[in-house]
Image (cartoon, rainbow, N blue to C red; front, top):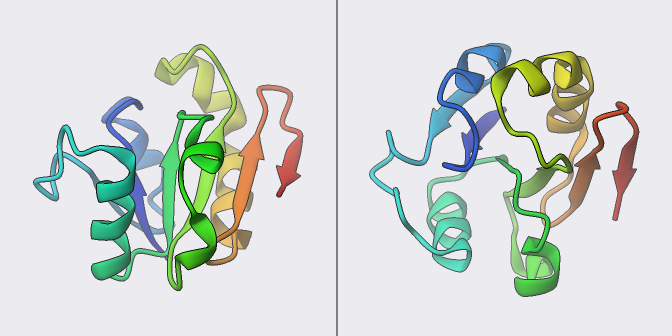
Length: 115
């Protein structure tokens, strides 16, 4: 899977996604892009998933138009690496299973919610 890590997450998280071809928004030259533009760029570059802490994306964006990109939301207020690492097995499961245009939320408890 080709995964894009949103800039609201620690850079080192990219290495925890090592099972996937993972890139950061900054690496792609997309730093500071608004959500709609970021999703359009990810779609055009055939990313499979956007991993983000932004819980508002499903309400703000028309995700059903996406043919390649699914969204995995890390539903936690603490986005520091030490808070995310215990969630990694659940995050990896969500990344592997999200569908194009779909949303999967991963809670700090490890609970995974699809919408």
